[in-house]
Length: 175
Image 1 (cartoon, helix red, strand yellow):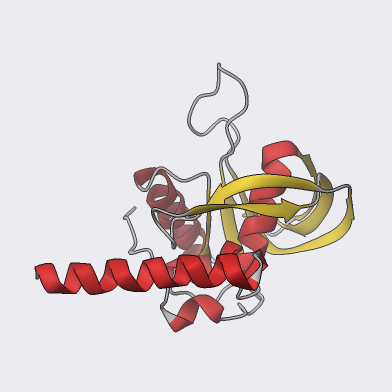
Image 2 (cartoon, rainbow, N blue to C red):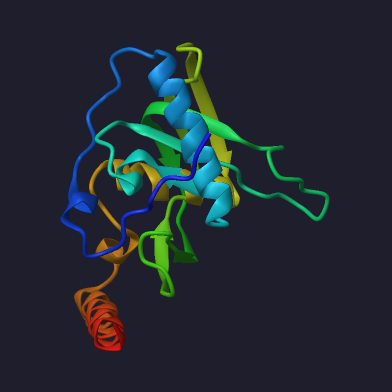
């Protein structure tokens, strides 16, 4: 197992629409394990393969629930996820491992159904609500080449992009 490098905005690979996984083999299972290690190392609750530079429709999530949550309790890997039903609307303050240091309120569905494959290649259907539903939508967006900032108004998105560019420039000046 190893920790992979997480790609940061404005890397153009983050705009990649990931390709479906056609065969689940040992390489895919190792990737899922490495993505899980990477997510935990970065203290995230979800990670998409595109965030680690891989053009594959795979996401891992471990969304905490309640005070008795322990790491790995809700761990799930979903391959080729697709939202098949949704309802309601909620605004939630989101952040992203690929856009570190920035958060914004994003509109999401309150409940959804996602279908895909599990790590064994078996069909799965996930019914989600709350933070789990929000995190699933966030990771599926990544697999579709979208970042949470792409869901903001143009003004808010431009402000965040300007701040990110300035932070990158300031970092380069320090080197």
